[in-house]
Amino acid sequence: MDEPPSYTLLAIFAGQGFFYTLSFAVILLLLGASALVSASEVAFFSLKADDLERFRESSDAKEKLIIELLSKPRLLLATILIANNTVNVAVVTLATFLMWDMAGTRNPTEFIVGLVTFAVTFAITFFGEIIPKVYATKRNASFAKSMAGTWKVLIALCRPVSKPLMSISRIVEKRFERKGYNTTVEELNQALELATGNDDTSEDEKEILKGIVNFGTLTVRQVMRSRMDISAADIDFSFTELIDYINKSGFSRIPVYRETLDKIEGFLYIKDLLPFLDQTNSFEWQKLLRTSYFVPENKKIDSLLKDFQEKRVHMAVVVDEYGGTSGLITLEDIIEEIIGEINDEFDEEGLNYQKIDEQTYVFEGKTSLHDFCKAIDVDSNAFDEIRGESESLGGLMLELNNELPRAGTQLTYEQFTFTIEAVDRKRIKRVRVNIHEQKES
Image (cartoon, rainbow, N blue to C red; front, top):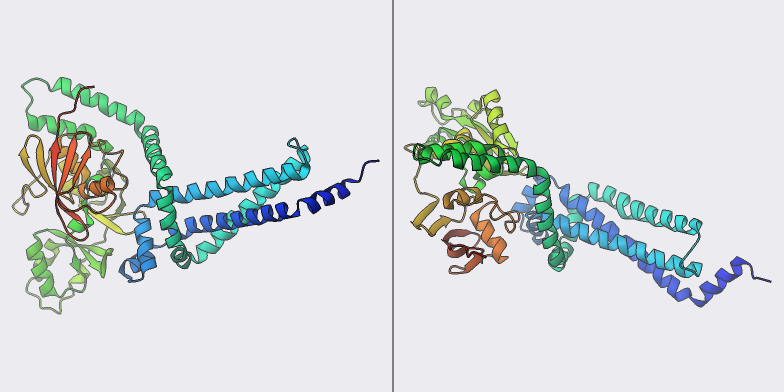
């Protein structure tokens, strides 16, 4: 006579008690790791602009590390997703093997399969996702600080996997988002080359036509002047200090900030000051500020041009995904993408680069990659595979070298050789670029 199932299970547990205890302990540890990973995702990416600004100004090492991690959000998110999926797959795999062993067969009944599937799904969803994310939402800053060191190590360990995944996702993203549109732009450019191939069309006319064709593909981030190049007045300036600053800047419109550039209070039009030039320091010039207009980095400039026309404004503050100021864009910047540079008596010509010969250029490190590609006459997507999150030539050098290079360092990518000519403690100041002829395959 067969023994009851309950006796059989007791015999199994008695013989393999240590194995089951260890397996359950490992599953619990993995669920704990899943909870930490899920909570980290919410904690890091729910930090407010005020928190980030406080961390930037703080001397605390962990808060500085949070800013460092969030400076490359794609890399951080990719590492979090890799870790989360790895842990969750490990939980499912271990639970499956445990089920097989307890059932005594690798072909368990549908009831057992359904029961284990429900139990594992519930455990991962409730204990590994919902509870930790609710907790991290309420304590995002403190939790991010406690996990910052761990994620710095994990980013380094996962880099061989995360970097290729980021490159692949970026390529797929561009193909899905822009494939149809880019094809049209390429066809228009080819038609433009054919139509303007005769001597009747001047180079300036060709450049204007090319600018019109490519105008709809450009984003604000590609065209804006960076945060480093913004001339802005402190709202606490006295009237005398303000007039002195305006005379030195040479601009007819300037943003006004409180404490940092991340807190733009409004724009000051210099023409609004003209009736009050005879006023003393007690004059409250802050009352003349006009409302500031904010735009995201990924907004298309053709759409922004329409907004400028509708709102009758000439300037906008560009903000990043965290609400911080990343740059400034003006109506002049947008128009220059069609008709070329507009220089007046206040503009410095040749500020960003120097052409040594047909193959050699010297650029400032802060030059945007968009302007760099225009200057050397290459496709604006030529460096997309290696640029990462960078938008400047100096940032591209950091992506190639993975650290701040020393003066004299040479970096090579395809037909380009980059020589670092000048650096300071925090940034690349000047880069020499040599362009070699591509070898025919």
